[in-house]
Structure formats: structure tokens, C-alpha cells
Length: 126
Image (cartoon, rainbow, N blue to C red):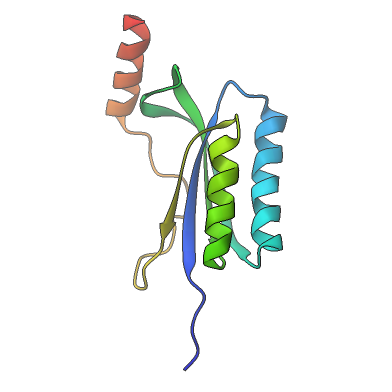
């Protein structure tokens, strides 16, 4: 009985105020960590700059990335530790993709009108 490797989704919200080169370097470092930790990157998508649902660290926009990868549990701990202390990371989430889950979309999900309205109203209130 062969055991298929577990697939994970890593969703990164990076500070739009950080230098574009710094954000790119961080994403490259994450990919290198996955490779050196015994994992493989199955998919990497940049969803671009999008409004957040609510302000995070006084920021209403973030640069979104989706990285699908496989790897051992120790890799998840190392990634979580690194992403928690990285200055460019506003939020991240690692999610185990269950068998039968539809594949990741070919293009980024649409930006919902409600998210931009909430972010705009928060900017006006500040």
C-alpha cells in the first residue's frame, strides 16, 4: 500500500508596504525551505495586491500568494516559525488539503466588493 504525500496549501499575506524585492525574496526563501526540508512545491500562484477584509497592522491591502507543497510534519513547524517572525508577513495559514478537494483555481479568486468597501470605510474612519 503506497502512501501518497500529504498536500498542503500555504496562503501568505505579505505587507504591501514592504519593498517588492523583499517580498519576492521571502517567497523564494519559503520555496527553498520547503525543498531543503524534504518537500516539493506543487504550485505557486501570486494573486497580487488585494484588499484585506479588515486592517492588519494598520494596513488595508496585502500581497497574496498561494503555495501548494508536500512535506513532512517537521517542515510545517519550521515554516510556521520562520513566517511568524518575518517582518513582511501580515498573516499566513497552512492548510492540509484533504483527498477529494478540488484543485486550486487557475486564476486568483475574484475580489469581493464588500472587502473593498470595508477597507475604504476603515481608511476614512482613521
